[in-house]
Image: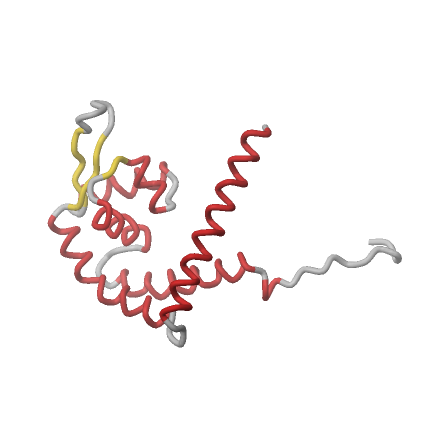
Length: 158
């Protein structure tokens, strides 16, 4: 930097995505410690919770919803199937594809850790009113929509 250049100003502590990242890391760290007591990871939690909430899914859709890349997800699913947490079924619409659903042990482990995760979620929003929590969710959905539209615009310009 030359003597007449101004330093770039960047307020990291108030940067929205830095704050999102810190919140997620703090949550995952705490959740991960609890999950490890029953042999699960945060990625296992995401898979179990998503399959419970959405029902049977193919790997592509599960990867989208859990935010786990497909290669990593495939390796995790292989282990979860071997451990009796998840079942692979033939996809009736596409014989080449597989549909994933929770197995009995997966349902059981999810029901074991769900109370902790729910309590953690409540602790995370402690001090916020129901209206603030609802507004926060609406604002996050709007940010996500904006970012997805931005990504689509960039792909169209390529």
